[in-house]
Structures are given as structure tokens and as C-alpha cells.
Image 1: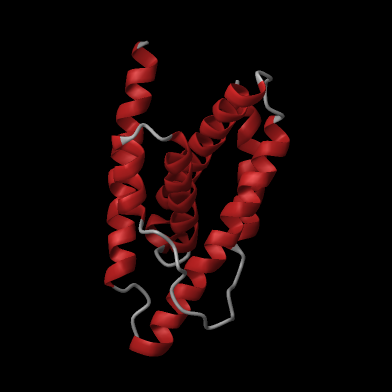
Image 2 (image 1 turned 135 degrees about the horizontal axis):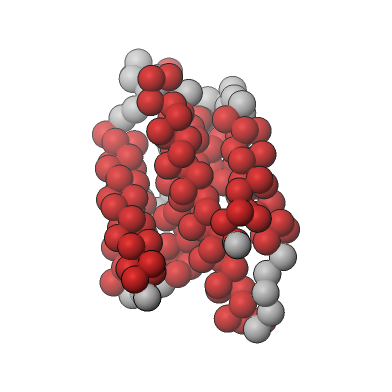
Length: 165
């Protein structure tokens, strides 16, 4: 039920974010590496950090989708899967605190605005890399991509476990 309600807002904002073009030549964002967040979220069972991992992986996939036209649909599908998990995680965390069901549309909009800002950060990072080194994807961004692949495998495993329960 949450996924079907979350699908439309997530897709709408993803479409907007994919069209975002960061023209400012800023440096790499001062973000904690996804790998560090992922390890911390798993080792401490921290849903807040896992939500950040999933948000960042959503944004990274959205930023990369336009760079690989032959894989664009797969990358967008992966971004959507991460976005849906963020919405589920944040709805659960909100319910834990408030004891009320979340307004999924409002929650989706808030999350997707945050992700849109992250997409802009990744675009600026790639622009900076391209301007300073001639290569859009540096070693740090490759590490982010590898971390998102690991997060994707973790998400798949988690989803399989949830289906069994």
C-alpha cells in the first residue's frame, strides 16, 4: 500500500531532478561517505543512517542516469527502489515517534526535495571533477557508486527477509 501511494510523488520529483542541471562549479560536497554510513547503519541497526544511505543512493543513481543512456532505465529503476525504501523507513520512524500513520504524500514530497538537493550536489561534484581533472567520476565517486551497489544488495536481502516474515 505504501509503495503504490509513494510511487507517483517519487516519480514526479525524480523526473524534475533528472532535468536539474548544476551549473555552479562547486567542489565535492562535504558528505560522510556512503560506505561509512552503510557500515554504521548496519552495525548499529540505525534506520536514520540507513535512510540517509538510501537517499544518497537515490540521488547518485538519478545523477548518473543521464550519463549512461543504454543503462538509463535500469539506473532509474534502482533510484526508484531506493526512494521507495527511504519513504518506508521514514514512515516507520515517524510512526514510532508519533504513534500515527504518516501522510505519505507529504513525506514523499519532503524526502524527494531533500534528494533533489543531493542530486544537485552530485552534479556539482561531477562538474567540478570534469573542470579540474577532465574526468567526471573520480575515485571518491566510484567508491560512492560501489557503496550503493552494496546497499542495493543489502536492500534486496532485506526485502526477501520481509517477504518471509
